[in-house]
Length: 448
Image (tube, rainbow, N blue to C red; front, side, top):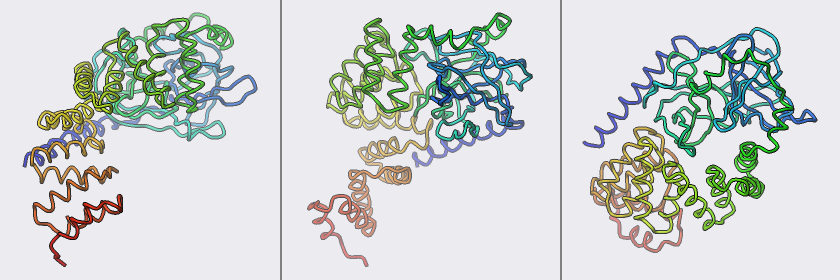
């Protein structure tokens, strides 16, 4: 019964969000103000794409700074088929990662700027952008996603907060607008990933929008300045790591940064990821530890390092880090799930249930969290509830041997021997030499 109540509460929560979504779409976002940015090298070859939006009708466009790195020119495309180009740069903030650009002379559709200072958890958000893998022949299809605010917290830099949102960002969304229920821009899509879709709040950007009466400088000047910019080096390394899947190149770039500034937090953090991709786990752990030495409240670093400790059996250390990540960022879905998993492993299933259920309220499609919730409920002998969430996790793509063993135990206890037989046969499909499964299959009562 308690699980049914939980699912009912979950459904009410999602329906509430759908109602908010519906009211927000009473009129559409002005998509003709959302631009595809195509960065090209000196030879005119496309080297990357991003998104942006027009904030002033004379052609003032806002995007992420990192979209501009190493670009000799930037073509601009709009959904109605119109085109422009970046004629100059009014403002860049490399640390906060935004840029205000000047388009060629014209009259452009715009989006209204909102107020990011009043955002609260569970406020509606929608993100708009162009997925890089859908861009062809210098054109792309605009994509809109929907979600809600998880919180507003700093990440690597304790002085720079981000909007954490469930509105999904894909590669190419960088610089695209994130809007509220009134379709006002409240952030720039900046970092994508499960539970870490990060948008830069718009308020630090909008204070510079009216300074565009000043002369713009050229992309060439930006290129020249970026030759010695640590931020430009970081975004190159980031692109090598996540865009090209080349950790060796990324490591070289991050090490150049750290030779100049040993306290560059994001270089340590992404260097850890690069080392992990190279299978150099001890080096990865050392870089996460250095990251947290520099910023003890970096949520993703806390959760990632906790994951390494968990896998190496250091459960007390893992739980401590997961708890701190959740304390820093209460709606951190991955950390909530990780904490529940670690508490299960410590034999504390009742505590685990609380964190896992919260993760699933925030992301009902998180299959691994459903699997871990099933483990906790099984340990508490709440077998019907465990069966329900195990089966849901299967629908979400989870297919672990241990889950089939638990489902076998549940069905056997409930005298549903055909279902128990099915689970044992599934186990033998996964592990054909499993003698224990063969033995238990032969011992089941014949019911057909």
